[in-house]
Length: 162
Image (cartoon, rainbow, N blue to C red; front, side, top):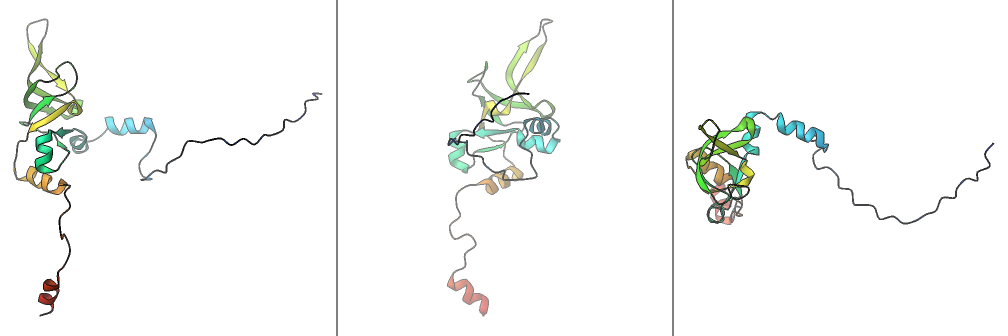
C-alpha cells in the first residue's frame, strides 16, 4: 500500500567515545550494583572505605597518601560548615559512614548537645595514633621504591655456594 522508497544508508565517519575495558570482570560497572555494594558492605570493608588523607607533613614523612581512620587520631575538617576546625576523633561510626570529632557538636532544642557526624573524605589526619599494627600498615603502604629490593649481589651468590 505504501509506496515509500527504502532510504539509502549514508556512510559518515562518527567519532565514538573511546570505550575502556573493565579491569576486573568480577566487579560490576553498574551504578546500582556499586551503590548496593557500598551500602551493604561489611564492617571490615567499611574500615577501608572510611580512609582519610594524611596531611602534607605526614604524607612526606611516611610516603603514604591515606590510611583508615581510627579513634584518637587528630584531624582537621577541610570541607563543609565545620571547615578548618581541629579535634580528636571520639568515635568511628562505621554503620553510618561518619566519624565524630570532639568539639564539633550542636545543641538540640531541648538543650542537649549531640556530636555531628563528618564523612572521612572531608577530613585530613594531622596526627596519627600509633601502635605496632599501624606502623606495620604504614611500612607496607610506603610508596618509595626500595633500592636493591629482591636483588642479589655477587657476594650473596658466592656466599650461598660455599
